[in-house]
Image (cartoon, rainbow, N blue to C red):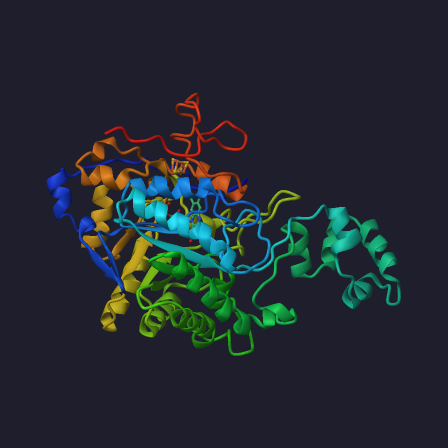
Length: 485
Ligand SMILES: Cc1cc2nc3c(=O)[nH]c(=O)nc-3n(C[C@H](O)[C@H](O)[C@H](O)COP(=O)(O)O)c2cc1C
Ligand code: SF4
């Protein structure tokens, strides 16, 4: 899968830097407790949501899902956020789901496995998501023969005012490519070149028009199930390319009171939050992940995010996790037969930067925006904890984020995948043994192809061990090797 890279192609290497002794770690801010609404975290470490593609086609928790989270819990981060989990009761491929009570028993087992493996230390949240329909990029001839809806506009441009549909299709196919493309509207051209994609602004689609009436109950039902399954909290997915983030986007010009102004764009996210809060018991934390910056032309900037963060905190959210970019708007066209993927364009790079970068580098691209948002919250008298992620791979970086008041909690995604024992190694004074992520995005490319996510630093190790769980092609181990202390 092609991924956009900054043209400067400056290469950045990771470094362990100074690792603390066990005694120093005990004093470090990183390992001081923090209250997240009703939940007490043992420290400031947080593994943000990462989809590993381990669920089955019905969306159920499998033994491989449990093994994956158990492996993270063995490293004792203060919190893990379980991957984006679908809130609807509709087939979604191997995406984890929580849209019906039949999913609760599997999720309960997952919660128990994490509690057991971390001796109760790691708190467990689940990210709940809604997304709109995205179709695969079509074969061009099939698009013109079948998928394109023939309109009066096409007939007018082709000067075939009364021609039957089939004749219009044949006339289009007979044109040379530039002429054929010129007949298409921007949305039709996008459907041809990237695959058809619904938007929250498609008010002519009844199910899209109704989202403000359907989503609060769907999110609330999912959150209630999460609490029933024993999760410590839920993270509403208000980030990246998905429905709720699209409502927040400056590109949302819905005319029904749920778009346009900042107040209109935050209205549904607030209504969803209220419904969720009313559905969960008092001991369940409720927060969200949102974008500190959409990083697309015409998208929401950090100023919009400040407004949203204040409104969400004022409404009572227990935490705000800040991400960046990851939009469909600037994603690269997929291959024919594949679906567009929101982490392939410049905004995708902002979300998961790799080691080839520009002068800003891959580590800490979201820090400026995160600090601005946190300062604005504090200036408004709100103490809501914030989480920031992006390129953190050593102790000094993590500690600096806290001392410099960029955020209250440090999100560590790919480094935790490269070495799930990152946290416990540092705490025990064994930081020098950390396997450092190289930010190659091999894992991310697997995610984009919906293949079981693993890390290239360990997935070929000890493949001959008997009984070792492997990827479906048998070539990779599914879990990081154990740390032999
Ligand atoms: C394989 C993979 C899957 C991811 N899945 C999700 C997801 O389900 N939800 C989400 O909000 N972010 C997801 N992310 C983004 C991460 O949570 C994180 O924001 C990003 O990787 C940047 O942090 P890092 O530099 O510490 O990796 C994913 C990242 C990776 C590498
Ligand atoms: S594959 Fe491993 S080293 Fe490469 S970015 Fe992912 S976690 Fe880091």
